[in-house]
Image (cartoon, rainbow, N blue to C red; front, side):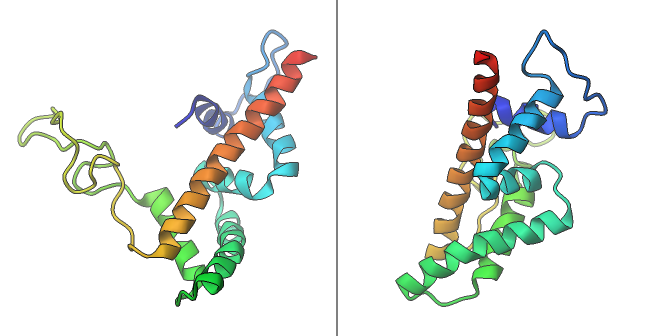
Length: 166
């Protein structure tokens, strides 16, 4: 997780939204920048909202938003299946898809210890995520969601840097 994503997560969960004039990275600054970024990158910020304690309504809206471009992709490629189902599966995988063998850490625990092996987990190849259906639609949506997360982080950082220039 990027530093800005960690700051956003902390800001969403804090009870202290006091603005500190000595910094531009207080919780209120980060949330304000995220709000401004969502004006231009609504879908990317919706993904962040869901990833960092989004409500059920936000998850439903995200599935709807992901299903639209996925539908076009599937039609263009002649793929069968339900885009909303694929989108639901990918949102669930993104939020709750920790590998059951390594617990999402990417390295298995040495039996009867708390120490982890140096080599990557064999079940998830070190990704920390459980496998998802191996279809073109799932892979396309995984890539798109990664791009959306990067766009969200970039947009928030850009808004924060504009504030710093003032």
